Length: 115
Image (cartoon, rainbow, N blue to C red):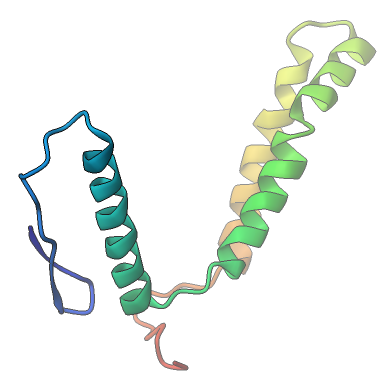
């Protein structure tokens, strides 16, 4: 298989048809090829995922993790079964507005300038 990575270099992956699907050797070969491909891609892209991982996990942990508890407490306090739906309805536009205000536009900006 041949492909072109985002930086313009080409990659070649050897596909072996000597092993048939269903055996342990075939699975090991697939895992080895997948690991080699991922290593090539990570070397080429050289990304740092901390800036993506931290906000993602905070957002999912706080807003997604506490969603059932907060919605249930709203339902228990109000007595209306559907009042708990207002929490995610309000949180979604609030996070959208915060994202619009604080995430910079990168359309005409060279994001690799500091590398």
